[in-house]
Image (cartoon, rainbow over all chains, first blue to last red; front, side, top):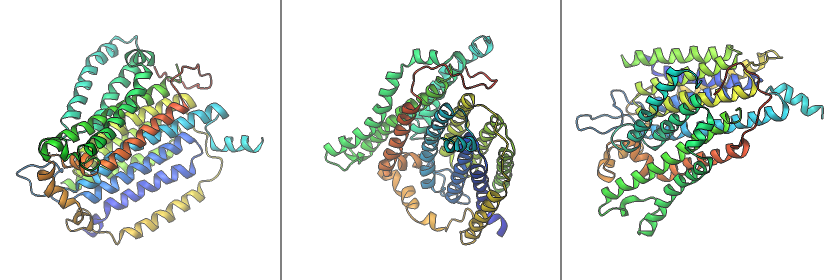
Amino acid sequence: MEVLALYNYWVVIFLMMTGFYVVIASGNLVKKIIGINLFQASVFILYISMGKVSGGAAPILRETIQTYSNPLPHVLILTAIVVGVATTALGLALVVRIKEAYGTAEEDDIHRQDESL
Amino acid sequence: MKDIPVLRVVTKITIPIILLFAMYVQFHGDYGPGGGFQAGVIFAAAFILYGLVFGTSAVRQVVSPGILRLLTALGLLLFAGVGILTMLLGGDYLDYNTLGQDPLHGQHLGIFLVELGVGITVAAVMIIFFLAFAGRRD
Amino acid sequence: MIELINIVLLGLLVITALAAIRLHDLFAVTIMFGIYSLLAAAVFVVLDAVDVAFTEAAVGVGISTILMLATIGLVGRQEKPPSHRPLLPLVVVIVTGAALVYGTFDMPPFAAPDAPVQQHVAPRYLEQSPHEIGIPNVVTAVLASYRGYDTLGELTVIFTAGVGVLVLLGFRRRRSHMADSPEEES
């Protein structure tokens, strides 16, 4: 069971690294932002995994239930998700403006245009 | 997409249900899963569905950009205002115990108002996002 | 049973993430991201975080995906094939990942009731909130009351992002001639 004990964390790290890879290896700005979002969602899973208590129930109090999972990570991630979409929208808005100013959303082309000035 | 009758009819049937569900999530968030953040997003989803099918100008006729801008600030001010109110009533900032005749009552009222503020701001900001992105095109 | 569902869902998440890397059609990548969010929401349900799952399902699958599709409609849906070999990013990612995996060996096992994170303020919230706040949903109680100041800050961030998008894109109509993607937005 030793492998299963840390399985969640390893999958989270793998997902984090796929997001990280998309951010640094892809030249397209929209895809970079999707990569940041993949990374972000994996961090959400990390927090929620930490809050899980075996045999626990969702933290909505009932008379008959004794064990609950930890509500604090839920609160932190709940707000983080909505803040995440807000910052994503801001990033996408920047991409739209970059596309309108440079005529492209590819990082290489933008650098080339900047250097040729 | 306005020309597809199925889409048009189904949209008009589902939008009131989505809005009602958003209200349920908003005001039942104390007792079950839900709260201002979720309700705001679901409320905005109804407007986005309307915008996707009937175009962004139709959404603009329902809520004008000026009202949206006002609502964005209003929700935040409601949240911060509750904090000021509790201070005026003699408590700490955002300490709802002073709002009602007994602490539990005050907490209920405080959470209700604060969640309402969250819901208003989140819904307005999400609709603004949609109008800003989709309105750029048509 | 719960563990099995958890393992399967996380496996599906890995497959979706890998598909998102391999695809170069941004429309397909965005749809993959939507599936990824939906699977993440399912994982949250399994891990008892119903409020979070609710939010992720509404935000990640709904709003985020629509905003990304709208952006693709404006900037074009094809990604240019990479001009250089992805060897260096791959090495960086593998080294970082290996360091993080090494870090997990000190972590308490998954779902352990005696982990340090379960011993701090969480028991107090669970025991005292019925007497101090009096509402059954502890997540709402912590969100709006115990950590109300925190939530006010988060809401300010959302407000600021809304203002930022308005400043960048605005409400005004403008006929865009750059976008040439085949699908229609409205």
